[in-house]
Amino acid sequence: MKRALPYLLLLLLAFTGCGRDPEPGAPGEVIILMYHRLTAGESTNLYERSVDDFEGDLIWLKNNNVTVIDFAELEKIVSGEKKLTSDAAILTFDDGDHSWYTLAMPLLKQYGMKATFFLCKKIGTGPRSCF
Image (tube, rainbow, N blue to C red):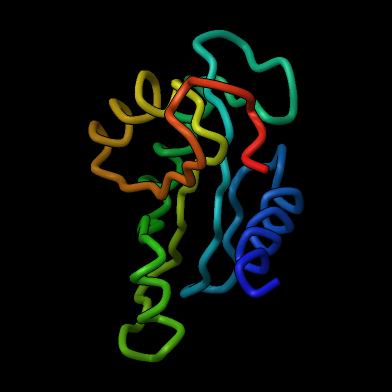
């Protein structure tokens, strides 16, 4: 159960934020954005985000001075070792879709942002389920 708790937390955070633009609250707050699959065209379901909308997310974060951090930095913030001077976001990708590499990585590099990728298999192969 302890191993499943972080995944359940991420799932809960993802569903509470799906379909909305990121809206951090008071300065110094952290938002976790979870993506599953990017599409070159228009997204057709809840688990997809068009590459244009994803780039819009990155531009919004940059223009609104939201610092993109990773989970190691979040741990330091929670422990008090590091203090946030602005709002922050953690970008995550789930399920191992090939679009991480073909669509997300070029944009992440272009905007100088990092992301956490949760893998349970090789990217773009086999059944979608990790369980």
